[in-house]
Image (cartoon, rainbow, N blue to C red; front, side):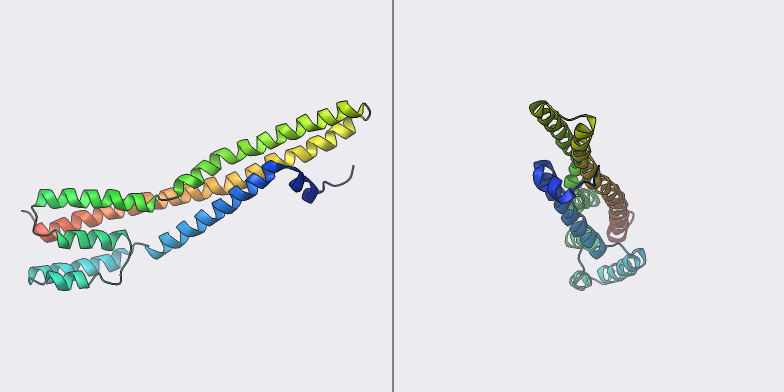
Length: 208
């Protein structure tokens, strides 16, 4: 039996076209999230330096200069800092609630598009399996229609049909791995946000 003509199989199977679209979508989301997380990467040393500078400026009655210290910085941590400085005159309880709301908003931004990776990781194998089932049905239908041939003919059709299952796994496995890696990163950044909020609350209100 000759080798499988993957190009022919690809153009003959609509499920492989669907999986190709899924793979492109998965790669696009993975690259976008990687670039975003790289851009907003948390640097504890830099944050502590910024926190010290903010504490000094606020204690000197220079909140505008404290806000300017965060200019040019992007990401969840600088946004939390700006929220804290802007609302520094509120009570400790109110500021704590505002920082909690800000953390929740930032977490939504951090988790954006991750659901796509999780969905693709779960559904791609089933799409591939569906393509395989359709291919096997077609192989037996062609065998019955021809009335000739033997197991070799059926085996050839089944081997081509199983390409869809392999393609589904090829899309799903990287999607699940990347999803788990990014989910872990989101949890770490969410923890850093909570730590930053607590430190800002202490700096701006102390023991009051």
